[in-house]
Image (cartoon, rainbow, N blue to C red; front, side):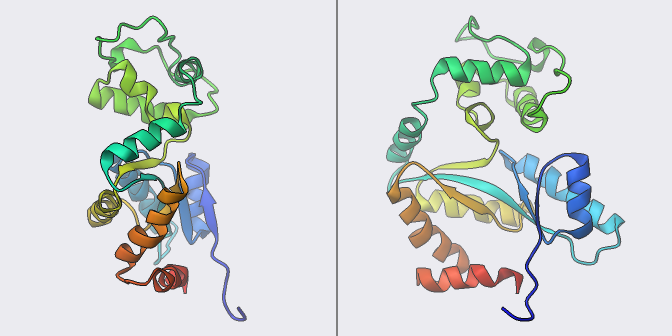
Length: 224
């Protein structure tokens, strides 16, 4: 539209990328798997923006991977069916790339700790994913199966909700209340039904509108 400026978005978690976003971006597309990581990321962007003298910091919008169904059991089945093609061998290879360790002979009943891992490999392309995974290992002491189901291992380290539309709505409101995100960029996955539940249930509820068309119009106006 005439007179309207196109918002500038940035994606990338390196120090250079964050500083670039803090200086000129209107919005930041962030890959963060949990609220703690999101709080740290957004806090860093806000500090950098203030350091550049900006009165209006960029909006931090994490990617939100949604596997939605009428109940949690169906949503979990949808998630597993969607990632069935990522066989264990490929997941083990990805895990080795991120941790520098071969877990193919790891005992299933033994928890993984940070002390079990070698030093972070130098020149790693997916350094952000590797650091996020190490932080999760230090905090949670996961099982091998837990690691093989992690977003960092399956693909990108995005915030993930596997459940009902109400679960997604509660998660978004929780992150917003905690100051972890200014919004989100949704990736409904697995089925047409999951997409429909996102558009017809989640977005209208978060926008405070009953009509999905009105909700979408409200979201489109967020940078006016």
